[in-house]
Image (cartoon, rainbow, N blue to C red; front, top):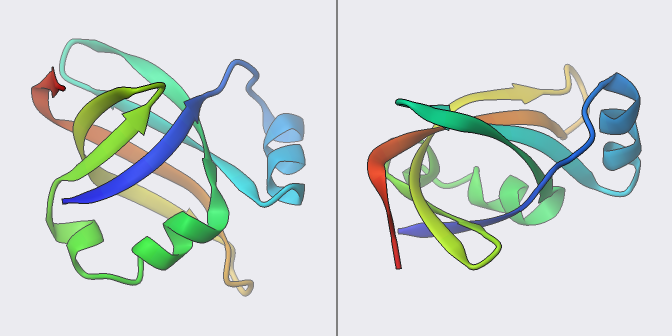
Length: 100
């Protein structure tokens, strides 16, 4: 199972997303089943390298947020039209349970 590291994002909006991308990070969201959506910040390069693997799209991932692990799947990825950059990722819960 691939591991994706993320931080919780407090600020939202286009301006903040642009500031993140300048420092080689990008926003994302974790949502699904009766849980409150969690806004995320992720480092670009580790995720960009992981997304080259087929397992990133087909299998469950381990999303690590502040020492908590969630089993998730990639729901949608937004990419820049001509730069090799990820702009945003949506994750959905693969299971309703978090594990330790």
